[in-house]
Image (cartoon, rainbow, N blue to C red; front, top):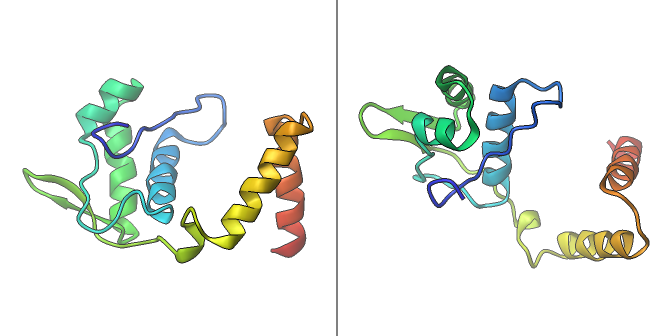
Length: 129
C-alpha cells in the first residue's frame, strides 16, 4: 500500500483517463472503509514515484475529488478525506458480501475467467439497475 493507505493501479489500456482511475480508486477505498474522514492521501510525489504518472494528473484527480466534496487540500499538509462513503454492506461480515464471496469462489472453482465473471456481473447488474 502506498503510504500505508492505498496502492494505485493504473491500466494504461483501459481507455479511461488516468486521473479518473485515480479518483475512482480513492472512492472505492472510501466505500470499502479503507479511507475515512481525516485520513491523508499520498502526496502527488508519492503517487508519481509509485505509478510513473505525470504529477499534474495526480493533482487533477485530487481536484476532482475536492470538487465532489470528498477531500480537502490543506496547504503545506497534504490532501485529506473529508467524507465517508462506507456502508455496512461493504463490511467483510456483511451477508450480501459473504454471498458474493461464496459465488466468486464457485466461479473460480468452475474455471471462469475474470473477464467471464465481469461479463456475468455486468449483465446481472444491468438487469437490476
